Length: 371
Image (cartoon, rainbow, N blue to C red; front, side, top):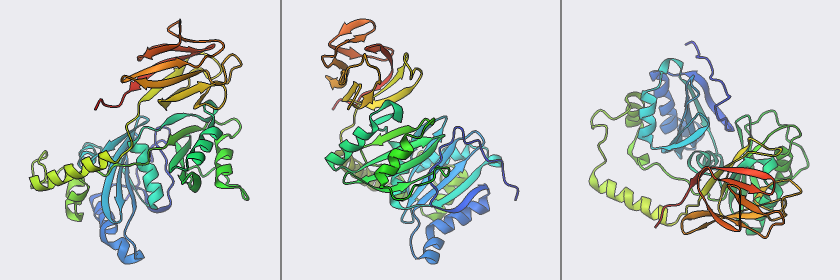
Protein backbone atom coordinates (compact mmCIF):
# COMPACT_ATOMS: atom_id res chain seq x y z
CA UNK A 1 0.00 0.00 0.00
CA UNK A 2 1.35 3.42 -0.92
CA UNK A 3 2.06 5.62 2.08
CA UNK A 4 0.48 9.08 2.12
CA UNK A 5 2.57 12.20 2.43
CA UNK A 6 3.50 12.97 6.03
CA UNK A 7 1.90 16.26 7.16
CA UNK A 8 4.13 19.23 7.90
CA UNK A 9 5.18 19.33 11.55
CA UNK A 10 4.83 23.11 11.73
CA UNK A 11 1.32 23.02 13.21
CA UNK A 12 1.44 19.48 14.59
CA UNK A 13 2.23 18.66 18.20
CA UNK A 14 4.89 15.99 18.68
CA UNK A 15 4.81 13.92 21.85
CA UNK A 16 7.44 11.47 23.01
CA UNK A 17 6.98 8.09 21.32
CA UNK A 18 8.06 5.51 23.88
CA UNK A 19 7.30 2.35 21.94
CA UNK A 20 6.10 2.76 18.37
CA UNK A 21 3.98 -0.15 17.16
CA UNK A 22 2.83 1.57 13.97
CA UNK A 23 3.95 4.93 12.56
CA UNK A 24 2.46 7.11 9.81
CA UNK A 25 0.80 4.25 7.96
CA UNK A 26 -1.94 4.96 5.43
CA UNK A 27 -5.41 4.42 6.84
CA UNK A 28 -7.44 1.39 5.76
CA UNK A 29 -10.35 -0.53 7.28
CA UNK A 30 -8.32 -3.74 7.44
CA UNK A 31 -5.54 -1.92 9.21
CA UNK A 32 -7.96 -0.38 11.72
CA UNK A 33 -9.37 -3.82 12.49
CA UNK A 34 -5.87 -5.16 13.12
CA UNK A 35 -5.03 -2.20 15.37
CA UNK A 36 -8.11 -2.77 17.52
CA UNK A 37 -7.34 -6.48 17.73
CA UNK A 38 -3.90 -5.53 19.03
CA UNK A 39 -5.19 -2.96 21.53
CA UNK A 40 -8.03 -5.04 22.97
CA UNK A 41 -6.63 -8.59 22.97
CA UNK A 42 -3.41 -9.39 21.08
CA UNK A 43 -1.13 -7.04 23.00
CA UNK A 44 -1.76 -8.81 26.29
CA UNK A 45 -1.42 -12.24 24.66
CA UNK A 46 2.00 -11.28 23.26
CA UNK A 47 3.47 -9.10 26.04
CA UNK A 48 1.56 -10.25 29.11
CA UNK A 49 0.29 -6.73 29.81
CA UNK A 50 -2.76 -4.78 28.71
CA UNK A 51 -2.27 -1.91 26.28
CA UNK A 52 -1.76 1.63 27.59
CA UNK A 53 -1.06 4.26 24.96
CA UNK A 54 -2.64 6.15 22.11
CA UNK A 55 -3.90 5.85 18.56
CA UNK A 56 -3.29 8.96 16.45
CA UNK A 57 -4.98 9.94 13.17
CA UNK A 58 -3.27 12.76 11.26
CA UNK A 59 -4.49 14.42 8.06
CA UNK A 60 -2.73 16.63 5.52
CA UNK A 61 -4.38 19.67 7.12
CA UNK A 62 -2.40 18.90 10.32
CA UNK A 63 -5.54 18.04 12.24
CA UNK A 64 -4.49 15.38 14.76
CA UNK A 65 -7.03 13.15 16.51
CA UNK A 66 -5.94 11.18 19.58
CA UNK A 67 -7.70 8.15 21.06
CA UNK A 68 -6.22 7.09 24.41
CA UNK A 69 -6.35 3.63 25.97
CA UNK A 70 -5.59 2.69 29.56
CA UNK A 71 -5.10 -0.95 30.53
CA UNK A 72 -6.76 -2.21 27.37
CA UNK A 73 -9.85 -0.01 27.59
CA UNK A 74 -10.77 3.26 25.81
CA UNK A 75 -10.10 6.14 28.18
CA UNK A 76 -10.28 9.59 26.53
CA UNK A 77 -9.96 11.46 23.23
CA UNK A 78 -8.75 14.80 21.97
CA UNK A 79 -7.90 16.93 18.97
CA UNK A 80 -5.03 19.25 18.09
CA UNK A 81 -5.37 21.61 15.14
CA UNK A 82 -4.25 25.14 14.28
CA UNK A 83 -2.21 25.28 17.48
CA UNK A 84 -5.22 24.54 19.71
CA UNK A 85 -5.84 21.44 21.85
CA UNK A 86 -9.45 20.30 22.37
CA UNK A 87 -10.92 17.65 24.65
CA UNK A 88 -13.35 15.21 22.96
CA UNK A 89 -15.66 12.41 23.90
CA UNK A 90 -14.92 9.24 21.96
CA UNK A 91 -18.06 9.69 19.87
CA UNK A 92 -17.05 13.28 19.03
CA UNK A 93 -13.70 11.97 17.82
CA UNK A 94 -15.47 9.37 15.67
CA UNK A 95 -17.72 12.02 14.11
CA UNK A 96 -14.71 14.18 13.32
CA UNK A 97 -12.92 11.17 11.85
CA UNK A 98 -15.94 10.41 9.65
CA UNK A 99 -15.65 13.90 8.09
CA UNK A 100 -11.91 13.54 7.44
CA UNK A 101 -10.50 12.75 3.99
CA UNK A 102 -9.29 9.16 4.43
CA UNK A 103 -7.13 9.20 1.29
CA UNK A 104 -4.44 11.25 3.06
CA UNK A 105 -5.01 9.99 6.60
CA UNK A 106 -2.02 8.56 8.49
CA UNK A 107 -2.25 6.32 11.54
CA UNK A 108 0.22 5.94 14.42
CA UNK A 109 -0.04 3.56 17.38
CA UNK A 110 2.24 4.03 20.40
CA UNK A 111 2.49 2.26 23.73
CA UNK A 112 3.27 4.55 26.70
CA UNK A 113 3.61 4.39 30.44
CA UNK A 114 0.79 5.97 32.51
CA UNK A 115 2.84 9.11 33.31
CA UNK A 116 3.36 10.03 29.67
CA UNK A 117 -0.28 9.27 28.94
CA UNK A 118 -1.31 11.62 31.76
CA UNK A 119 1.05 14.31 30.51
CA UNK A 120 -0.52 14.17 27.04
CA UNK A 121 -4.01 14.34 28.54
CA UNK A 122 -3.04 17.37 30.63
CA UNK A 123 -1.95 19.21 27.49
CA UNK A 124 -5.16 18.38 25.60
CA UNK A 125 -7.56 18.91 28.52
CA UNK A 126 -6.13 21.60 30.80
CA UNK A 127 -5.16 25.24 30.59
CA UNK A 128 -1.72 25.44 32.25
CA UNK A 129 -1.14 27.63 35.30
CA UNK A 130 1.56 29.40 33.30
CA UNK A 131 2.21 29.31 29.54
CA UNK A 132 5.05 31.54 28.43
CA UNK A 133 8.58 31.52 26.98
CA UNK A 134 11.18 30.59 29.61
CA UNK A 135 12.73 34.02 29.01
CA UNK A 136 9.57 35.63 30.39
CA UNK A 137 9.17 33.75 33.67
CA UNK A 138 11.40 33.12 36.68
CA UNK A 139 11.64 29.46 35.79
CA UNK A 140 14.01 28.49 38.60
CA UNK A 141 11.73 30.22 41.11
CA UNK A 142 8.70 28.27 39.81
CA UNK A 143 10.60 24.97 40.17
CA UNK A 144 11.67 26.01 43.68
CA UNK A 145 8.03 26.72 44.62
CA UNK A 146 6.95 23.25 43.40
CA UNK A 147 9.69 21.71 45.54
CA UNK A 148 8.84 23.73 48.65
CA UNK A 149 5.17 22.82 48.47
CA UNK A 150 6.08 19.20 47.71
CA UNK A 151 3.34 18.91 45.11
CA UNK A 152 2.76 16.72 42.10
CA UNK A 153 3.17 18.78 38.94
CA UNK A 154 4.09 18.57 35.29
CA UNK A 155 6.29 20.99 33.38
CA UNK A 156 6.38 20.76 29.61
CA UNK A 157 9.07 22.49 27.59
CA UNK A 158 8.38 22.87 23.89
CA UNK A 159 10.57 23.79 20.94
CA UNK A 160 9.21 23.63 17.39
CA UNK A 161 6.07 21.94 18.79
CA UNK A 162 8.11 19.09 20.28
CA UNK A 163 6.53 18.49 23.67
CA UNK A 164 9.02 17.40 26.37
CA UNK A 165 7.50 16.38 29.72
CA UNK A 166 9.04 16.66 33.20
CA UNK A 167 6.91 14.96 35.86
CA UNK A 168 7.28 16.04 39.51
CA UNK A 169 6.34 13.68 42.33
CA UNK A 170 6.24 15.19 45.80
CA UNK A 171 8.05 18.29 44.55
CA UNK A 172 10.94 16.42 42.91
CA UNK A 173 11.45 15.82 39.20
CA UNK A 174 11.00 12.07 38.96
CA UNK A 175 10.51 11.24 35.28
CA UNK A 176 11.35 12.83 31.92
CA UNK A 177 10.06 12.17 28.41
CA UNK A 178 11.65 13.88 25.39
CA UNK A 179 10.07 14.38 21.99
CA UNK A 180 13.02 16.52 20.87
CA UNK A 181 15.48 13.95 19.54
CA UNK A 182 18.05 16.68 18.76
CA UNK A 183 18.68 17.31 22.47
CA UNK A 184 21.67 15.35 23.74
CA UNK A 185 20.98 14.42 27.33
CA UNK A 186 24.00 15.15 29.54
CA UNK A 187 25.54 12.69 31.96
CA UNK A 188 26.11 13.37 35.64
CA UNK A 189 23.21 15.83 36.03
CA UNK A 190 20.08 15.58 38.13
CA UNK A 191 16.77 15.71 36.24
CA UNK A 192 16.18 19.22 37.60
CA UNK A 193 19.55 20.40 36.25
CA UNK A 194 18.89 18.70 32.93
CA UNK A 195 15.53 20.46 32.69
CA UNK A 196 17.17 23.86 33.31
CA UNK A 197 19.77 23.08 30.66
CA UNK A 198 17.01 22.41 28.13
CA UNK A 199 14.98 25.46 29.22
CA UNK A 200 17.80 27.94 28.57
CA UNK A 201 19.53 26.86 25.38
CA UNK A 202 21.40 29.82 23.82
CA UNK A 203 19.65 31.30 20.81
CA UNK A 204 16.55 29.10 21.11
CA UNK A 205 13.05 30.05 22.25
CA UNK A 206 11.64 27.46 24.62
CA UNK A 207 7.95 27.59 25.55
CA UNK A 208 7.06 26.51 29.09
CA UNK A 209 3.75 25.00 30.22
CA UNK A 210 3.36 24.69 34.00
CA UNK A 211 0.64 22.32 35.24
CA UNK A 212 -0.14 22.19 38.96
CA UNK A 213 -3.64 20.75 38.64
CA UNK A 214 -2.94 17.11 37.73
CA UNK A 215 -6.56 16.00 37.40
CA UNK A 216 -7.45 14.59 33.99
CA UNK A 217 -10.90 13.65 32.72
CA UNK A 218 -12.12 10.26 31.56
CA UNK A 219 -14.44 10.52 28.55
CA UNK A 220 -18.04 10.10 29.68
CA UNK A 221 -18.59 7.43 27.05
CA UNK A 222 -15.32 5.56 27.71
CA UNK A 223 -17.03 2.42 29.00
CA UNK A 224 -19.51 2.15 26.10
CA UNK A 225 -17.36 0.47 23.46
CA UNK A 226 -15.97 -3.02 23.12
CA UNK A 227 -13.75 -3.92 20.16
CA UNK A 228 -16.63 -4.50 17.70
CA UNK A 229 -18.57 -1.36 18.59
CA UNK A 230 -15.37 0.72 18.56
CA UNK A 231 -14.60 -0.47 15.02
CA UNK A 232 -18.13 0.41 13.90
CA UNK A 233 -17.95 3.80 15.59
CA UNK A 234 -14.59 4.73 14.03
CA UNK A 235 -15.61 3.63 10.53
CA UNK A 236 -19.15 5.06 10.41
CA UNK A 237 -19.09 7.85 13.00
CA UNK A 238 -21.93 6.39 15.06
CA UNK A 239 -23.40 3.00 15.99
CA UNK A 240 -25.87 1.81 13.36
CA UNK A 241 -28.22 0.11 15.78
CA UNK A 242 -28.84 3.42 17.56
CA UNK A 243 -29.67 6.94 16.42
CA UNK A 244 -26.65 9.23 16.47
CA UNK A 245 -27.78 11.18 19.52
CA UNK A 246 -29.18 8.25 21.51
CA UNK A 247 -27.86 7.96 25.04
CA UNK A 248 -27.18 4.81 26.98
CA UNK A 249 -30.08 3.38 29.04
CA UNK A 250 -31.20 5.72 31.79
CA UNK A 251 -29.69 3.72 34.65
CA UNK A 252 -26.23 3.84 33.09
CA UNK A 253 -26.61 7.52 32.24
CA UNK A 254 -27.61 8.36 35.81
CA UNK A 255 -24.74 6.32 37.22
CA UNK A 256 -22.25 8.03 34.93
CA UNK A 257 -23.53 11.50 35.82
CA UNK A 258 -23.17 10.71 39.54
CA UNK A 259 -19.63 9.49 39.01
CA UNK A 260 -18.83 12.63 37.05
CA UNK A 261 -20.20 14.84 39.81
CA UNK A 262 -18.18 13.00 42.46
CA UNK A 263 -15.01 13.49 40.41
CA UNK A 264 -15.85 17.17 39.99
CA UNK A 265 -16.28 17.63 43.75
CA UNK A 266 -12.82 16.25 44.40
CA UNK A 267 -11.04 18.31 41.77
CA UNK A 268 -9.16 21.47 42.61
CA UNK A 269 -11.03 24.76 42.07
CA UNK A 270 -11.21 26.08 38.52
CA UNK A 271 -8.87 29.05 38.20
CA UNK A 272 -9.05 32.23 36.15
CA UNK A 273 -6.78 32.36 33.09
CA UNK A 274 -5.53 35.59 31.55
CA UNK A 275 -3.93 35.77 28.10
CA UNK A 276 -1.68 38.78 27.51
CA UNK A 277 0.52 40.14 24.75
CA UNK A 278 3.61 42.33 25.17
CA UNK A 279 3.32 45.44 23.00
CA UNK A 280 6.61 47.15 23.86
CA UNK A 281 10.14 46.29 24.92
CA UNK A 282 12.58 43.56 23.89
CA UNK A 283 9.90 40.86 24.05
CA UNK A 284 7.38 42.78 21.95
CA UNK A 285 4.88 40.47 20.22
CA UNK A 286 5.18 37.62 22.71
CA UNK A 287 1.92 36.19 24.08
CA UNK A 288 1.50 34.14 27.23
CA UNK A 289 -1.13 32.82 29.62
CA UNK A 290 -1.12 32.98 33.43
CA UNK A 291 -3.54 32.07 36.20
CA UNK A 292 -4.56 34.48 38.94
CA UNK A 293 -3.16 35.20 41.45
CA UNK A 294 0.00 36.08 39.53
CA UNK A 295 2.81 38.41 40.61
CA UNK A 296 4.60 40.56 38.02
CA UNK A 297 8.02 42.09 38.52
CA UNK A 298 11.74 42.06 37.85
CA UNK A 299 12.68 39.20 40.22
CA UNK A 300 11.11 36.28 42.12
CA UNK A 301 7.69 36.67 40.50
CA UNK A 302 5.47 34.46 38.38
CA UNK A 303 5.92 36.77 35.39
CA UNK A 304 9.34 38.37 34.87
CA UNK A 305 9.76 41.71 33.04
CA UNK A 306 13.50 42.29 32.87
CA UNK A 307 13.72 46.08 32.85
CA UNK A 308 15.45 48.32 35.41
CA UNK A 309 12.35 50.55 35.59
CA UNK A 310 10.20 47.58 36.71
CA UNK A 311 10.18 47.05 40.47
CA UNK A 312 11.32 43.75 41.99
CA UNK A 313 7.66 42.99 42.85
CA UNK A 314 5.72 45.49 40.79
CA UNK A 315 2.07 44.38 40.49
CA UNK A 316 -0.28 41.49 41.01
CA UNK A 317 -3.19 40.00 39.05
CA UNK A 318 -5.88 38.67 41.38
CA UNK A 319 -9.56 37.70 41.47
CA UNK A 320 -12.14 39.68 43.43
CA UNK A 321 -15.93 39.51 43.04
CA UNK A 322 -15.49 37.35 39.93
CA UNK A 323 -13.35 39.99 38.21
CA UNK A 324 -9.67 40.11 37.34
CA UNK A 325 -7.99 42.94 39.24
CA UNK A 326 -4.56 44.48 38.69
CA UNK A 327 -3.05 45.68 41.99
CA UNK A 328 0.04 47.85 42.18
CA UNK A 329 2.47 46.58 44.85
CA UNK A 330 3.83 50.01 45.86
CA UNK A 331 6.06 50.05 42.78
CA UNK A 332 8.48 52.90 42.19
CA UNK A 333 7.30 53.79 38.67
CA UNK A 334 3.64 52.85 39.00
CA UNK A 335 1.07 50.77 37.16
CA UNK A 336 -1.31 52.16 34.54
CA UNK A 337 -4.46 50.85 32.88
CA UNK A 338 -5.30 52.49 29.54
CA UNK A 339 -2.92 55.33 30.41
CA UNK A 340 -4.41 56.06 33.86
CA UNK A 341 -2.32 55.42 36.96
CA UNK A 342 -3.96 52.93 39.29
CA UNK A 343 -3.52 51.16 42.60
CA UNK A 344 -6.37 48.68 42.14
CA UNK A 345 -8.32 48.33 38.91
CA UNK A 346 -10.58 45.73 37.22
CA UNK A 347 -9.51 44.47 33.81
CA UNK A 348 -11.41 43.44 30.69
CA UNK A 349 -10.21 42.19 27.30
CA UNK A 350 -8.36 44.80 25.20
CA UNK A 351 -7.25 46.82 28.25
CA UNK A 352 -3.66 48.05 28.05
CA UNK A 353 -1.68 47.53 31.27
CA UNK A 354 1.58 49.46 31.66
CA UNK A 355 4.11 48.01 34.11
CA UNK A 356 6.71 50.75 34.22
CA UNK A 357 7.67 51.22 30.55
CA UNK A 358 6.33 47.85 29.36
CA UNK A 359 2.84 47.61 27.83
CA UNK A 360 0.76 44.44 28.18
CA UNK A 361 -2.46 43.97 26.20
CA UNK A 362 -5.22 41.85 27.77
CA UNK A 363 -6.28 39.47 24.99
CA UNK A 364 -8.59 37.10 26.80
CA UNK A 365 -9.95 36.46 30.30
CA UNK A 366 -11.45 33.13 31.30
CA UNK A 367 -13.17 33.27 34.70
CA UNK A 368 -14.30 30.28 36.78
CA UNK A 369 -18.07 29.72 36.89
CA UNK A 370 -19.97 31.42 39.70
CA UNK A 371 -21.18 28.74 42.15
